[in-house]
Length: 111
Image (tube, rainbow, N blue to C red):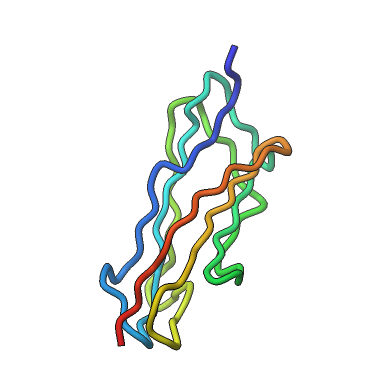
């Protein structure tokens, strides 16, 4: 029996091409790929950019097997605003039942 297994299904940023000063929004989805209910508060996530926690949810809701839940920001809100050009590192940290799964990547910011 697999049980509940929450995984990062997608992670994108808007705008797609980043420039210094852009107000960046991250959109992501989590999916329960397991065979049982992922109970609320049994999983949580944090998204870091250059070591700074830019968004998180530690009070998550129930997630049925096979279902997906999406996260984004409401209009006029944003997660991060780059102040300098170059490569910036992000980490999406998903914790479930005291197990951690980290997805890492880079964001290239143009002048």
